[in-house]
Image 1 (cartoon, rainbow, N blue to C red):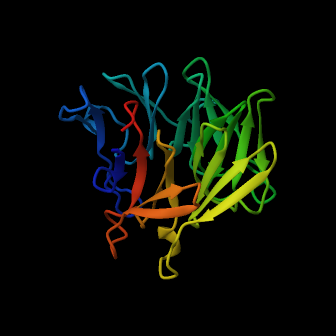
Image 2 (image 1 turned 60 degrees about the horizontal axis):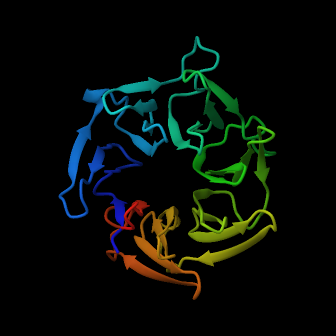
Length: 287
């Protein structure tokens, strides 16, 4: 079994990611050598700091950058920014997260500015503030998305878990103290269970219909600093194994039946380089 793992080698992050190298990875056959295409600001990418990349069902690649939302069609870039003279533009140009849902609708998380949805005209955006008692203006920063049944689940950096209801077209906060304030990664498995990773290194399974939440704690030493405990990504492979990437403690495999974590990738004493795992991909071939 082979997993594609995005480490700090492929995404160079220094002081919260100063440089991004965008690589298009094309594999023609299972045994061929990968071919990389390097796209930079010289090609039209709006900014070198890229926080997230997704592809919609139409084939467009969307990139959340510190200076605009980028759409790449394989030939050129289209950039969406905050336009002061345009009422329905993005509220700011610093984009923390982007997500393409089952209908290829594009959802955007402008940093500390709630939720935006690209309209059908492909030019303007609807805005949804994520209001809470602590943030009545709704200026909350989104960290991740996941889709389940008729809801879009939204993890935030400071105010926990929200969801957008497709039927009512409203955003609500899911209030539960067990979830905590910072949801940094989300995954919906084949059973419909919603998995959450937090900045404290907790892996949670959640069934919204029953409200049942189970908490699994990564086996961290007390000497590990808080910022290295964060779970950046959760992936489940076709053999039913969970893979959990962290912000300084490498990669863990989680066996749900035994409720045990196995440390799969770690270089002791080096947190800022090889032990930061940003993403794990299980491809269509089962790799």
